[in-house]
Image (cartoon, rainbow, N blue to C red):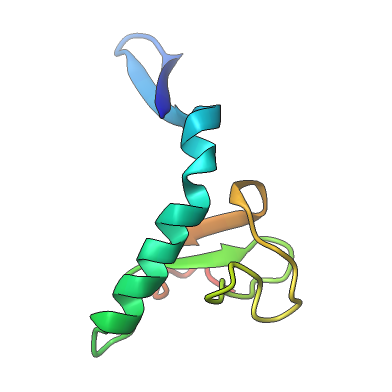
Length: 88
């Protein structure tokens, strides 16, 4: 589901990239993330948000952007903390 690729030597450093099989699981994982946020909410909001890179909107329960309505996928999203300074 993930492949390890070395991006630096001395010291060796690796990144982990989704394989085609792993990418097929993205919708399932996003629905599980949404389910957890709905059934086990935290007082200060979700610990992780999925954002649309084009407009900064967040993923809704239909895996679409809540701002522009575009269908979201790994290629057009980024994830992180909702409190991160890079969030729009």
